[in-house]
Image (cartoon, rainbow, N blue to C red; front, side, top):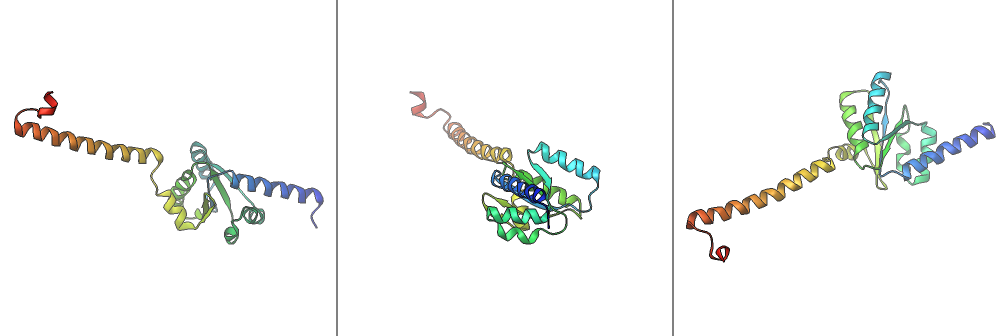
Length: 171
């Protein structure tokens, strides 16, 4: 039977995990076995740069935390080695960890969550494939510019065909 002090510490850890999960927009759970210290350090640096909080978690305590948050369906993934990455950015953790999993065969994505919804491995990978906010803005601006360029070319073609500016433009 665990002592009262140990039990209290475990409850605090579960409460901390619950707060991390509730306080983040998205998160990813991974199996990190098979990576060495240097690779782990490089991964943690990359995650830190992306604004992702990454920590190794105990499976039993993680089961209690996800149950308390309402993600009971995640309880089955907590076996073997488990780490959790959470962030306010909805795609940052998925993007970094899925890229890392492609390069390291023993490192695997288990599952994740996004805005209160549980994601399976395919859902996390689909999330990782979404372009970044900056990439989406560039695409949108390019689309807007192409419409303006098309209009300008059409107007120029009318001017070139007639040999002069339209009557409204002269007034």
